[in-house]
Image 1 (cartoon, one colour):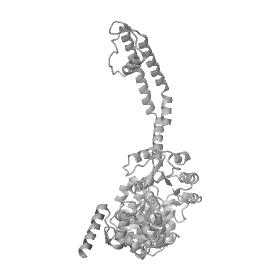
Image 2 (cartoon, helix red, strand yellow):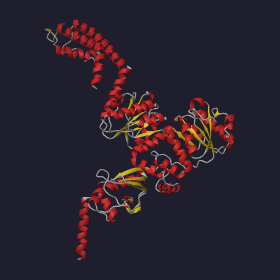
Image 3 (cartoon, helix red, strand yellow):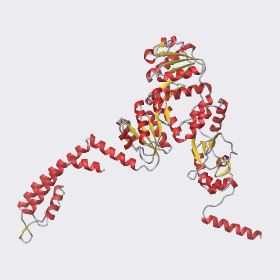
Image 4 (tube, one colour):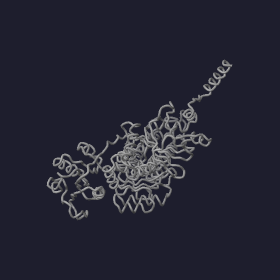
Length: 573
C-alpha cells in the first residue's frame, strides 16, 4: 500500500502543485480584499474564513457569502476563484483517472492486493504454477476438499478466468512467469504455511526451473512436477523432487493394467478420483492386434507397453523420420481409409488415435469405425474444450493429460498412504483387486469414494490416543462402528495400516489392534469420514462404542441421571 501511495503522489505532483497554488492565491486574495460588516465598518476576512469559503466554493456547493455580504470586489474575486478552482479540479481528476487506467499502475495495484492476500493466509496451502486444463481441474478438486491453493499463471486470460470461478474457498491468482524466482517468492514460496509446490506449466524447462527454485529457496517443501519427456523427467528427479508425473507413461501404464488386470485398473480409477466424480465403469480391452496412429511421445509410451503385453502393434505415422518410427511403419495420418487398410485395420481388435490434433484423432476413429465396427477405441484428447465432441464419439477410453495428472496429484497430496496401497495392490492378483472393488462398492454410491488418513495422534485422534495410553484395548473394528448405533457399521473400510516403525498391513481385519502413532488409510463416503472424526475426538462416544453405555454430556442431564440412580437405589433398598 505504501508503494501505491508513493507512485500515486509521484505521478500526481503536477495537479497537486496546481491545486495548492490556486487555493493559496484564492485564499490570499480574500484576506487582502477589504469587505464591510453589518455596521458598515471596514472588515477583512481572516485566513480561517477564507480557507473555509474557498473550500466549499471550489466544490461548487455554494453555502453563501460569510460572515457578511460581499462587496463587489470580493464577488469579482470569488467569480475568478470559482473558475480557477473548478478547472484545476477537473484537471486533477482527469489526471487521476488516466493514472488509474494505466496498465503499469493497475498491475501494481493487482500485485499489492495479491501480496496482501498471501499475507492473510493462515492455513496450509499449495503453490500451483500453471492454470491450464490440469491446473483448473486440480484447483477445483482442492477447493472441493477444502485445501487452499495459490496460482501463478503467465497468461492473463487464465488468471481472469480464475477470478470469476465459483470456488468454495478463495484462490489468489498472480499473472507472472513461474520461472522467475521473484514471482514465486511473491506467491508465497517462503510463506510459513506453504506446504508444497506443483509445477504444471506446458513447458518442461519451466517446470524444471520451478522445481530447482523451490528446492533451493525452501528445501522443506514437497515438490510435484509435470514432465512430458524422458529427459525432463530424469532431470527433475535428479535433485530430489518427490514426484515427477509423465502423463503419457501414466496412461500407457493404466491401459496395460486394464489389459492384464481389469480389477486393479478399476481400483486405481476409483481411489484416485476427484470429489463428486462419477464412478468409472469396468474396462476390458481386447487382446490381439492393435493399430497405433501417431508415434510421438504418447505413441512411443503406448507402443512400449502394448509390446510388453505381448500384443501385435501396427504403427501409422506421418513423419517417421522425425519421430524415429520403426521401419515397418505405415506412412500417413490414419485419417484416410487407404492408410488404415494398409495397417490391416479389419484384422485389428483395437485402435489408438494418438496424434496431437483432436480433429485428426476424431477423424481416425470415425473412419476406422466404418471399416471395423468392433474396434476397441482409444483416443488422445488434447483440449478440454472438445469434451462434448469426444463424449458424442462414443470412445471406449479417452486419454486427457489434465485428468491424469490432476487425479494423480490430488491422490498424492490428500492421502500419501494411498500411493503405498496402490503400489502393493499392483502386486496382487486380479481376483484380489475385484474383491477390494466389491467391498468399496458396497459402502459407496455412484460417486468416487472418499479416501482419507487417520493418524493416532493427539491432533487427529485425541480420544483414541488417551484411551490407548490408559491401557484400553482398541481395534480397527471399533473405528468402523456407527457412533449413533454401535450395532451398525460406518460406510467405510480400512485399506492399509502403517505403524511407527514403517511396517504396514493391507486390508487389516477388524481384530487388528491399534497402537499410538498408527496411520490408517480409509475409503468410504464423506458421511463415514465425518462420523469417524467424531468418534476419534470424543471420549464419551468412544466409551459408548467400547462398552455400549451412554453417558449424558450436559450438567443438567448428568445431575438428573445421578438423582435417578439414587432414587432407584433407595427404592430397591
